[in-house]
Length: 589
Image 1: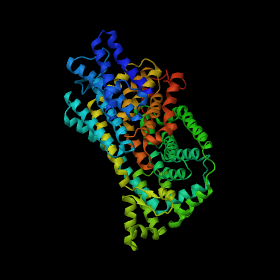
Image 2: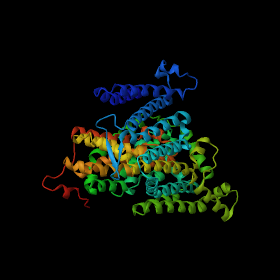
Image 3: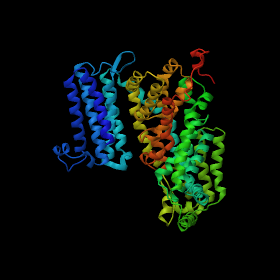
Image 4: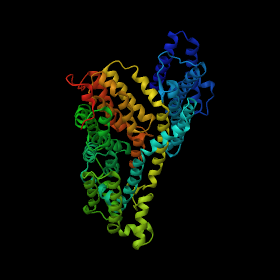
């Protein structure tokens, strides 16, 4: 019903201006395209139905996948009709149609800019209906490439050269090469930490001290502290988060719920840390400085995190407190049956934590952690390495460590629950995520270089006439770019550049913009399956984005909190009237 209401509102929004202009044929055409698209979308996912029966059957009887495909098909068909009417009639359907220029020459209509996104949404919904949980194994990657091809064809038709589009893709990919290397190193680290006994030791000791009543809130707080100290949510999730996932599942929590608690804490710490790249990038784009930016974020970020902790506390209290002692004992015995577990193993994560505290680069830290974990495995788990490699001696140890770094490994265990806890994917397990990110970056690079993203953002800006409207537009742009450009940095940089002068014109201080960029751009990126952050964390934690996203309460509450403060007029930093705009918007330390 909610999807139907949204579709009805969209159709009404499109045809009402046409009715006011007495453009009745166009209004009827759009209405027909909405109905036909709705029916056809359901028809292609319901093979046992006839096309005629779709107009008479109740939509409430459709599956969720069918409903999503039918809605997205309806939107796509309306977008195509809208675009075709502009293309062939050489005019827009609305007098206030948003247009922007590419390189000062070409004008892009809003219908043209949105068309690749409509294609992407339709293909992604069709993938969900067709492949279920298997969409990340190739279907979503092909959907992103298909949408990128549509965007490229439209851009070529507007006069954008293929070389320009290719430059956009290369720039988008090159800017993310470090993140891709980090993903591969995370896979290697997870493998050697499993092989050395570090992760099993964390699980074993964690089960001794953790209780279901406070596990979720403790997990979120611990990840927040580690991320605050390191300035990196990715490093936090890859180290502490992986171990806590196993502990949580052993205590009976679902992988999605554990992932939500881990990500909520990690992204709160990342957002508030002065060491974080996004925390420094946002004020730079807004023309402000770091400390006022962090101070402004406290007002919206702290309530959002406290709200998330409250929800996790309630969920923990409602969890099954009667954890089977025999089951826990079975897990302890299963972990120690083939693995030597001792507190000395924690020298590996402690060493990594020391490097993080010293602000050593993420790549160097993760590479050290992976190699050190392999060295410790050779001395701490010689029998385990011999069993995995199938031969002893130096060659067997070398083979086992390389296997752990590069490919999937399964440590021996008799109990199926313990067996599930003792597996790691290595670098091989990250290749699917890297594949998805590369395809997403191709789509984002073409969309940005063609000017389509700027066109869509400008359409929002044209309708801003108040402070709360400006904050709403900034928030919507950040979330929208996380969906379309698939990169959180673009979700900070693009609206930062776009709205910087608008905030100054309305007397709002730079930290008002930078705070909104973080509240909307930084924390929502991990909720999008094909975004670099969403794909990365899903790969590291081994749980689909769609499974953990509903439980990322901090990430959901953060943009809502910034909108609440804007609409209530609370704590909106303003420019000092005694200073010039230039003095207050200069990027000073």
